[in-house]
Every structure is written in structure tokens, then in C-alpha cells.
Image (cartoon, rainbow, N blue to C red; front, side):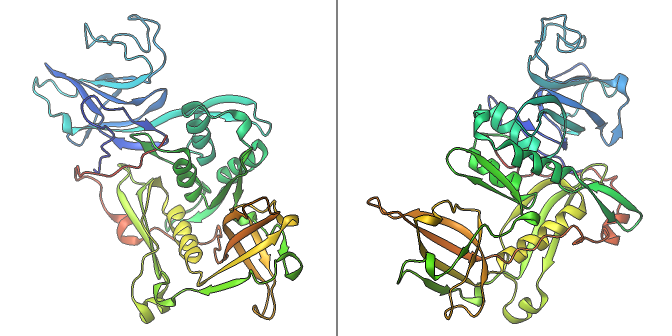
Length: 410
């Protein structure tokens, strides 16, 4: 059983956990056959399963406190636990108290749980909060981190585009996992955060795992699933300042030929570590293995990892870059947009490009420099296959507790 270490050490921050995770928590009490571990910031949803030395505990062998606001020592949910006389209420902090055996000496490293983490708010397309419950939807996890966690004003969110992204992630798709054909949600985000980082990193992480682009114009943050993305404008000679077009081919010897997605198998009882590799076989034959980069996501189905690996490899296989300066009529173009570049005879045909960055010309000139890359990314709900036969038949009875790196967020 692989276990995530979600604590930052003595006196450190407790984890901010979304979705499902198999974790041990931070030990706060171990005496006379009773153990207590802090799990993370509340409010969490529930226990899926608890094990001690690989054996599953029954509900009368543990007390789960979800991390609600405590009303005092006698609070029936978040009061002082009956097995910890003289203990605290741990208001707003999720924790577990367990009596796994009748033995007085316990090994805290062997108390492992699979949990469903924090409740997250939900909103409609106009930004009105409609509830709060458990969800691993990337859009809802993000909004919980930004609005509730980082206190970002709700006026900064383009709620219609966020709502469209939320529905896009939750939409069921069909997957033949090798044993049966079933419906799964298109994208999920089972993420745990153990320290502070910037909202930009959070935005990148949650959109990266859902094949979505985000864009901030300084007033509103918008979200665009790539499957529905199209060119916002055509940039031709009439819009390009004379002498500003440049074309820089990239060294094909550096073009990636492999993408590896690291994740936890959501279909494994213990969320076993897994990976999926997408290869460009002809490219590997020509120039060897060149990885896109490191992708380490939380729990997901093999289907999601397979679809993301193919998407990210295709996205990385652009072999050229363009730079142009456009006139004021195109100042609305922002990083994240797709544009069509039509500039004969330098280009034999129009090229769909991703705006990687923009730069306003100084000294008040009504012009903008665009840095463009051909848009090679292709996402499809059908880019998945069955779980590898070897993985599908492996047993999960062996207890393994390695050190696991976890991402950090706001």
C-alpha cells in the first residue's frame, strides 16, 4: 500500500486535501492502545476504508472527526473525543482516533486510511453559491482554493466560462477498461497541498489535468477547454506592422518523443502508484527518448492519464515559433488565445497558433507584440484504452510505505 506523507513536520501546516487519498496523517497521540492522527484542514467528507497492519477496521474501531467548527468540548461531531480525555476539539481540523487492536503498543506507521477530502463550494453560471459538498471536479477544487482559500474576490471570475468548464469536467464519457464498458467523469482532480504557493501555480495545475486553458485579462479569469477552442481572429498582412514578422524553426532533435503521466490508480483499493507512457515511436527511432517534462498528478482513472499523455505529447511537438507586431485593432488578443496566422509567401498556408505571450510596445504606441507557436495539441475522449492486463490482475495485499512527493498550492 503506497501512502502519501501529507504533513510538513512538527509545527508545520496540515494538509489541504481534495478528492480521494490514501494517507497516514500526522500522529498526535499514541498511548494505551489508542492513536490519534491529524489529517488536514476541514471540512472533510468521509472515511472510505481504514486499515491497521493491512487489516480493515470496522466503524466501531475508529472515530472520524471531519473538521467542522467546534461548538465546544461537548460538540457531538467536533468536541473532545471520548477516547482522548483531556484532549482538544481541533476545531476546523479533520482528525481520526483509532483503537485497532487490544494491544497497548501500536505502530502508527501501520494505521492507514483512504479518505474523501474537503467539501468544496458550488456556484451557478452567474457566481451565486448554490451549495457545498464533496467533489473532485477540477473547476470546483480550483474555486475552493481561490475564493475560499486565497480570498480572491468573486468578481475576478468569469463565472459563465467557469461553469462551462465545470460541466465539461463532469460530463460522463464511455470507457472500456478491459473488463467492462462503463461511464466515468471526463476529468477529476484528487489533489493534496501541503504548503503555500501562488494562485498561478494552482490555476496551471488544475487546468493542466483537465486539458483546459485559462486566461487573465486583469479583470476576469476565463477558462477554455481545448476541445472547444477555436481561432479568435486571423492575422494577415493588413494587421502586421511591416518588417516585424519573424520565423524561428526549432531544432527537431529536441522535439519530445515521450510523455509520462504519474498518478494514483483510482480503481485500486489502495490508490496504488501508477504511470502511463505515450510514445512517438517513429520519433524515438530517429532521435531517441526525449521527455515532454514531469507530470505528477493525484488519483485518476487510467483513462484520464492516457488521454492527458496523448494530449500533452501532441501539444509539445511544435517545431517552430513566430513573432509578429500587430496594430491596435488586435489589442484584445491575450496569452492563451488561438489565432490564425496567414502570411504568404513566408507561410505556404494559414497556421493555427497558440498565443504564448504578448508584449505591449512601449511609449504609448498602439501596437502589441505576439509570440506564437503552432497549435499541435489534439484532445479526444476516445484517446484511451483498457487498463494494462498485468496491472489489472495485480494484487494489492502487500503493505508498502514509500516517501511520496506531493504538490503544493495556495
